[in-house]
Image 1 (cartoon, rainbow, N blue to C red):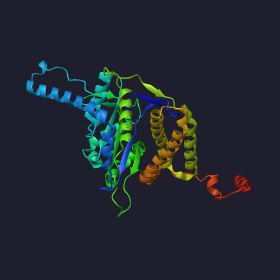
Image 2 (image 1 turned 60 degrees about the vertical axis):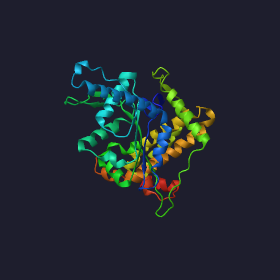
Image 3 (image 1 turned 60 degrees about the horizontal axis):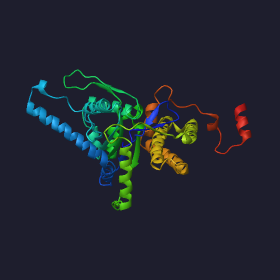
Length: 362
């Protein structure tokens, strides 16, 4: 969320990616999920401070309009405020804020959405939930436009490029409502990184240790660096900065090829769908680490190891939560039915070249 001017080329996509990712922290009540609020406010301090100044401009305009009453011809134009940190999501407000970004700066920026209670995001009418799902499908990829058209007088119509990073905490029951069948099959599930926060029954409550002074200083310098890479001193946008991650392309292709091999051997339709965005999300995280570490050749091996670990971690979480249901829903769709057994399926776990040749002849 703090790096909307950074771009990276992912080897499987023609365009550039913005470094946004969506995190779902799932666990029982009182399991320690609340620590995420502390971490979010610590990391996003400079952004929240900037947003608060923009919100004060909005409130001053509302107060001025209220004093003027209904004499609209005397009202000045609404200020083009840019607020990027949000907790309560309404699609009309999100569209308006995204449009204000482009009208003020000429380019889209990223939003950061935080909620410490996932159940709050499942409320609303069916139409509201459908709109949120539609925005979720386009907000993962840079350049995927969302169009809102309304006929009522106070509506806001615009075609916008919405890009969101998020941290959302909640319990398992809320997750099942938040990511339903349509979201599983529509791709929303694959755009999220699942983190389990709860431990075993009867375990001691988690103890959250504070950061040391050195760690807090590092966090402050890092967040300030990212803000400087976004805005100039005269409130303009910095030029887009492209991180060269081509040295990781072979590893991305190698990991994805290994997942396709597992699919060929019967891993299922869910695995075939989820591994692709697991890889792209991991690639984005690896890009941010590489950038913050100075983009030096000596750190590439550590970043490479992180990519492999994160890609598998994300994939395992998605398969654990949604894999079975995805396969059940996909089994009835054309092209996703039960796969035909391959030669590999008909061989024993350990086999010789002669056994393969005999099976081929048969």
